[in-house]
Length: 228
Image 1 (cartoon, rainbow, N blue to C red):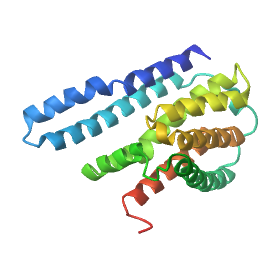
Image 2 (image 1 turned 60 degrees about the vertical axis):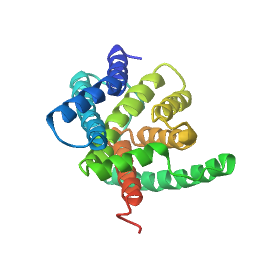
Image 3 (image 1 turned 45 degrees about the horizontal axis):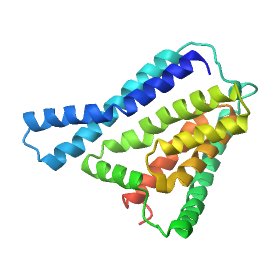
Image 4 (image 1 turned 135 degrees about the horizontal axis):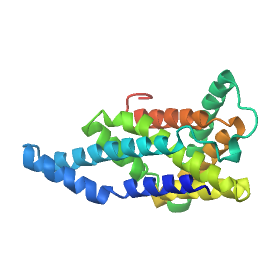
């Protein structure tokens, strides 16, 4: 894997796990400078730090990738046209939604657990506390994850190993870092489908678009804003 790809992974992991330090700092600032309750301060500190760390990650990643030659064999060849890319995005969202339903059924049959993903439930609760968090979940998060897991990790690994093995490794990594082992299968399959979209279209914007729409739909459904 190229050095700058490895740097991007390091930066992403560093800022991802910086929450253990950053959230308490923001919490202390909020409780010492405002009169909000401890519970609200805890929720807002997670929201503020998540948005800040992800925006910082995106800025650093874009700076590293900006005007550099591509080191990713996934994108070699002809890219799909803009119109066909939209079709792939819509088809990808449908595929992702069906895959999640199937994975949820399998998980419930194996473990008897039919509850919502703990990760999704946490994000929904944070969005209820601060609706602006919807922007983070629906847009910033997916853009960052597609750059890191599909363009960098999947693309970087595909240069040094079989493309299918690279897809499995990047998707497993994607699933594990969501921190919800009971729904690992769902995240893993989502990762594989997004790798497929990126490979078939040779456009990271397609996997980003499908990911953004998927997150938005799932969140709006969980909030009861659609489908109710």
